[in-house]
Image (cartoon, rainbow, N blue to C red; front, side, top):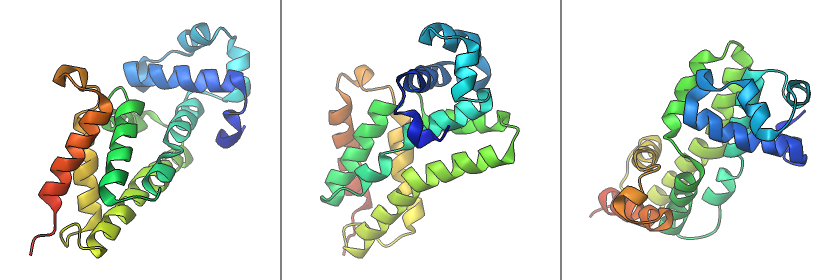
Length: 191
Protein backbone atom coordinates (compact mmCIF):
# COMPACT_ATOMS: atom_id res chain seq x y z
CA UNK A 1 0.00 0.00 0.00
CA UNK A 2 1.32 3.50 -0.85
CA UNK A 3 2.39 5.55 2.18
CA UNK A 4 0.26 8.55 1.16
CA UNK A 5 -2.84 6.31 1.17
CA UNK A 6 -1.96 4.57 4.43
CA UNK A 7 -2.98 7.50 6.59
CA UNK A 8 -6.52 7.15 5.22
CA UNK A 9 -6.92 3.79 7.00
CA UNK A 10 -7.42 3.82 10.76
CA UNK A 11 -5.55 0.54 11.31
CA UNK A 12 -2.59 1.63 9.20
CA UNK A 13 -2.52 5.00 10.96
CA UNK A 14 -2.41 3.23 14.34
CA UNK A 15 0.49 1.08 13.14
CA UNK A 16 2.34 4.15 11.83
CA UNK A 17 1.84 6.18 15.02
CA UNK A 18 2.61 3.37 17.46
CA UNK A 19 5.54 2.23 15.31
CA UNK A 20 6.89 5.79 15.28
CA UNK A 21 6.85 5.86 19.09
CA UNK A 22 8.52 2.45 19.37
CA UNK A 23 11.25 3.10 16.78
CA UNK A 24 12.15 6.34 18.54
CA UNK A 25 12.20 4.69 21.97
CA UNK A 26 13.95 1.44 21.09
CA UNK A 27 15.62 1.87 17.71
CA UNK A 28 15.18 -0.39 14.72
CA UNK A 29 16.70 -3.50 16.31
CA UNK A 30 14.83 -3.04 19.60
CA UNK A 31 11.36 -2.96 18.07
CA UNK A 32 9.52 -6.25 17.83
CA UNK A 33 6.58 -6.77 15.52
CA UNK A 34 4.86 -8.70 18.33
CA UNK A 35 5.02 -5.65 20.63
CA UNK A 36 3.70 -3.38 17.90
CA UNK A 37 0.82 -5.78 17.19
CA UNK A 38 0.00 -5.90 20.90
CA UNK A 39 -0.04 -2.08 21.15
CA UNK A 40 -2.29 -1.79 18.09
CA UNK A 41 -4.47 -4.74 19.12
CA UNK A 42 -4.05 -6.57 15.84
CA UNK A 43 -2.57 -9.77 14.46
CA UNK A 44 0.69 -10.14 12.57
CA UNK A 45 -1.13 -11.04 9.34
CA UNK A 46 -3.05 -7.76 9.60
CA UNK A 47 0.15 -5.78 10.11
CA UNK A 48 1.78 -7.58 7.20
CA UNK A 49 -1.25 -6.79 5.06
CA UNK A 50 -0.33 -3.11 5.33
CA UNK A 51 3.46 -3.49 5.60
CA UNK A 52 5.26 -6.44 4.04
CA UNK A 53 7.98 -6.62 6.68
CA UNK A 54 9.73 -4.67 9.44
CA UNK A 55 12.06 -2.92 7.01
CA UNK A 56 9.19 -1.68 4.85
CA UNK A 57 7.34 -0.61 8.00
CA UNK A 58 10.34 1.44 9.19
CA UNK A 59 10.71 3.15 5.81
CA UNK A 60 7.01 3.95 5.54
CA UNK A 61 6.90 5.31 9.08
CA UNK A 62 9.74 7.72 8.31
CA UNK A 63 8.05 8.79 5.07
CA UNK A 64 4.76 9.28 6.91
CA UNK A 65 6.27 11.35 9.73
CA UNK A 66 8.37 13.52 7.40
CA UNK A 67 5.41 14.33 5.18
CA UNK A 68 4.28 17.88 5.84
CA UNK A 69 7.57 19.43 6.90
CA UNK A 70 7.98 20.92 3.42
CA UNK A 71 4.61 22.65 3.71
CA UNK A 72 5.62 24.26 7.01
CA UNK A 73 8.94 25.48 5.62
CA UNK A 74 7.33 26.86 2.47
CA UNK A 75 4.48 28.71 4.22
CA UNK A 76 4.35 32.45 3.66
CA UNK A 77 6.07 34.47 6.35
CA UNK A 78 9.35 35.98 7.38
CA UNK A 79 12.51 33.92 7.64
CA UNK A 80 12.25 34.07 11.43
CA UNK A 81 8.60 32.91 11.41
CA UNK A 82 9.31 30.03 9.08
CA UNK A 83 12.40 28.88 10.98
CA UNK A 84 10.53 29.07 14.27
CA UNK A 85 7.60 27.08 12.84
CA UNK A 86 9.81 24.28 11.55
CA UNK A 87 11.85 24.20 14.77
CA UNK A 88 8.65 23.90 16.83
CA UNK A 89 7.36 21.13 14.55
CA UNK A 90 10.61 19.17 14.84
CA UNK A 91 10.65 19.58 18.63
CA UNK A 92 7.02 18.42 18.81
CA UNK A 93 7.36 15.54 16.33
CA UNK A 94 10.51 13.83 17.56
CA UNK A 95 11.14 12.24 20.96
CA UNK A 96 14.78 11.54 20.21
CA UNK A 97 17.25 13.24 17.94
CA UNK A 98 16.61 12.36 14.34
CA UNK A 99 20.25 11.39 13.78
CA UNK A 100 19.60 8.18 15.74
CA UNK A 101 16.83 7.32 13.27
CA UNK A 102 19.20 8.02 10.40
CA UNK A 103 21.78 5.71 11.97
CA UNK A 104 19.18 2.93 11.99
CA UNK A 105 19.43 2.91 8.20
CA UNK A 106 22.43 0.62 8.62
CA UNK A 107 20.02 -2.20 9.48
CA UNK A 108 18.20 -1.95 6.15
CA UNK A 109 19.06 -4.62 3.61
CA UNK A 110 17.40 -3.36 0.45
CA UNK A 111 19.15 -0.48 -1.37
CA UNK A 112 15.84 0.88 -2.67
CA UNK A 113 14.73 1.46 0.92
CA UNK A 114 17.86 3.47 1.66
CA UNK A 115 17.04 5.60 -1.38
CA UNK A 116 13.44 6.05 -0.18
CA UNK A 117 14.60 7.29 3.24
CA UNK A 118 17.25 9.58 1.76
CA UNK A 119 14.71 11.02 -0.68
CA UNK A 120 12.11 11.54 2.07
CA UNK A 121 14.56 13.46 4.28
CA UNK A 122 15.85 15.48 1.32
CA UNK A 123 12.48 16.24 -0.30
CA UNK A 124 10.53 16.99 2.86
CA UNK A 125 13.12 18.52 5.17
CA UNK A 126 16.68 19.23 4.04
CA UNK A 127 15.97 20.39 0.48
CA UNK A 128 13.31 22.91 1.56
CA UNK A 129 15.55 24.07 4.43
CA UNK A 130 18.42 24.68 2.00
CA UNK A 131 16.07 26.66 -0.26
CA UNK A 132 14.88 28.71 2.74
CA UNK A 133 18.47 29.50 3.69
CA UNK A 134 19.23 30.53 0.11
CA UNK A 135 16.21 32.85 0.20
CA UNK A 136 17.53 34.35 3.44
CA UNK A 137 20.92 34.90 1.83
CA UNK A 138 19.36 36.43 -1.29
CA UNK A 139 17.24 38.79 0.85
CA UNK A 140 20.32 39.89 2.79
CA UNK A 141 19.00 38.45 6.06
CA UNK A 142 21.70 35.78 6.35
CA UNK A 143 25.39 36.02 5.69
CA UNK A 144 26.64 34.89 2.31
CA UNK A 145 27.59 31.31 2.95
CA UNK A 146 26.79 27.84 1.72
CA UNK A 147 23.01 27.41 2.25
CA UNK A 148 23.54 23.69 2.93
CA UNK A 149 25.93 24.54 5.75
CA UNK A 150 23.49 27.10 7.16
CA UNK A 151 20.66 24.55 7.02
CA UNK A 152 22.76 21.89 8.73
CA UNK A 153 23.80 24.30 11.49
CA UNK A 154 20.18 25.24 12.16
CA UNK A 155 18.91 21.65 11.99
CA UNK A 156 21.78 20.44 14.18
CA UNK A 157 21.04 22.98 16.87
CA UNK A 158 17.33 22.11 16.90
CA UNK A 159 18.19 18.39 16.89
CA UNK A 160 20.30 18.86 20.04
CA UNK A 161 17.28 20.21 21.93
CA UNK A 162 14.75 17.52 21.05
CA UNK A 163 13.12 16.32 24.26
CA UNK A 164 14.85 18.96 26.41
CA UNK A 165 12.17 21.68 26.79
CA UNK A 166 10.99 20.42 30.19
CA UNK A 167 14.58 20.25 31.47
CA UNK A 168 14.91 23.92 30.53
CA UNK A 169 11.58 24.78 32.21
CA UNK A 170 9.96 25.86 28.97
CA UNK A 171 7.77 24.46 26.22
CA UNK A 172 8.62 23.53 22.63
CA UNK A 173 7.20 26.70 20.98
CA UNK A 174 9.17 28.95 23.36
CA UNK A 175 12.31 26.87 22.92
CA UNK A 176 11.86 27.02 19.12
CA UNK A 177 11.65 30.81 19.39
CA UNK A 178 14.87 31.04 21.40
CA UNK A 179 16.76 28.69 19.11
CA UNK A 180 15.57 30.67 16.08
CA UNK A 181 16.57 33.98 17.67
CA UNK A 182 20.06 32.72 18.52
CA UNK A 183 20.45 31.26 15.05
CA UNK A 184 19.30 34.42 13.25
CA UNK A 185 21.50 36.60 15.42
CA UNK A 186 24.54 34.41 14.85
CA UNK A 187 23.91 34.03 11.10
CA UNK A 188 22.87 37.60 10.38
CA UNK A 189 24.41 39.32 7.42
CA UNK A 190 26.62 42.06 8.87
CA UNK A 191 27.90 44.98 6.81
